[in-house]
Length: 453
Ligand code: ATP
Image (cartoon, rainbow, N blue to C red; front, side):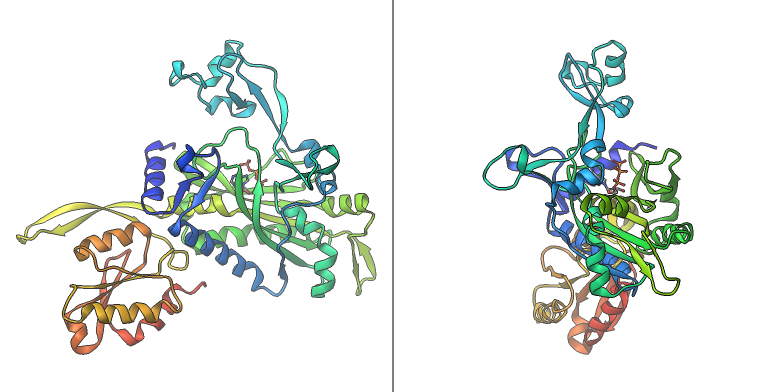
């Protein structure tokens, strides 16, 4: 069910706590582009790290980092120059531009018709005929901007993997089945950007292409489908917020396609696609480059073009999903100064500890009696391995709230007892339970709790 207030809350917290800023905000912003602030960049980095480890700690997956600009023939071969387009219509009256298949969800661009749906304008015959709009951004290589030196900002990272199939296989001496993983930026000149980070013009993908013998593809497809949904669950996504969507209408090259969908505040949306792309890509690149992208099986003495099982996740979209999944407003009981109780709302991000931007905050209970010195020494020791935050301003309750809003899993407080026996309190974010542990054990404590599993 759509919940615009929830999206607003996420956007507001993202700005307030330094997760996401609008790109070029001081100039009025650039549509469909966002900047990751101090908290956001850590969360994004941790999501990518969790994915990278999941993929490349396996013996059968290698990583690469291909360049964003590629030979223009790559995109002719892949079909992007010809087909990577959305049907677009213009409103003759207000001049707004819409994706034809999203008109029912779009608002009329004319401010005078506040709240009116674009589908009504379409019924009134105000729209042009649909025409195809290619989503690739173009630029030029070198100082002269003409047709002969057009290059594209890649709209997906996958092609950088296919064209390196031989390079990676030969240098890593991998045998089928094996995969190649890559994380990187992709660009799409989307007609309508909306829903915050869901559909942006610049975003990051985490893609893995797994090369298998034809005939083994269906089994591997099932395997990767399960692996990928389990990965989201392992990092804290609630099961009921995830589901598979099976594509009935398949792209011409695909044999099977499933999306993993997350329930965003505006409804269900794709966060990852798992596709059986057959031998389409390697075959096309073989044909158009004249270089054989095939495989010789020493055991069966067969030569063939491998099939590809693709797992293609958006890092930025997953970021948004992890943020929505983690957000909660809880009613908690609070003790007042006179000993009475009242309730207050606690806004908290329940991130998995491995993904949390800051792992621990360290507080001296008061700014005197040697407590700041002890808290500082703990911070200096922990910061060698973890992103931690020292905070000595305001009441401890307020300091907890600030950390809850950033999703910091542990708050460490140095109090009077710490000065006597060397123990500190560690308060866990979700259950808000405190335990006392020796300050010398803090490093191990954190390692055990936050290590990527
Ligand atoms: P959609 O149908 O939502 O446009 P798609 O099917 O074109 O997505 P893919 O080409 O399969 O998406 O891309 C793989 C992943 O990349 C998606 O699951 C999504 O997480 C991410 N992605 C694609 N387009 C965007 C975008 N404009 N902004 C942010 N992430 C995107």
